Length: 192
Image (cartoon, rainbow, N blue to C red; front, top):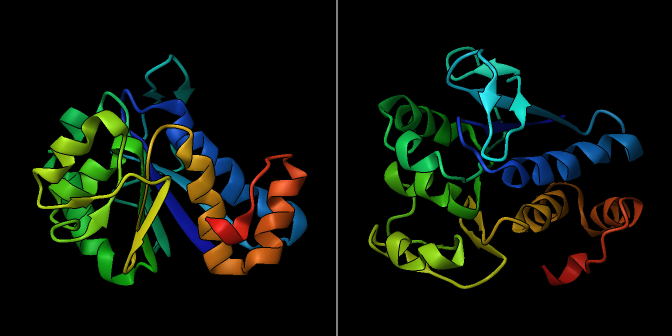
């Protein structure tokens, strides 16, 4: 079983984390016990997302189990939370155990702030390309960019593509395409 942690924070953009959550969880309906997706937050308190959705985290940064994939969504709240030392420490201490460190949209700034994107290719929300480049990142305009064990996805809706990309990397093209077909999302997995 692959354990995936998605870090949420106040003012997180809903689709940034819900889209990959859905795709990465849906595989269990086809092949049971493939993934376990956890929502991670600084505390156990409900998270108030940008558009009003209230979400209960599964675990906190302190009691989070070992992870295979760590994913950061973006959103308005990232400006404050990406600078928190507890977040940066969490990324740095978990990095070695991870198969992939990933982000959606402006979630890339959590990785950049922790120094993980220096000299790497990455993407983010189109209007934030210049800001990300200021971190020494080679910014690429693409839905999904994979550099080593870091995978970043462009704008808000790209969380779907990131989810399918991760499924393809972990479970192969056939199973990832089956998930896409089941949720009726038109995508050619081999061309991600």
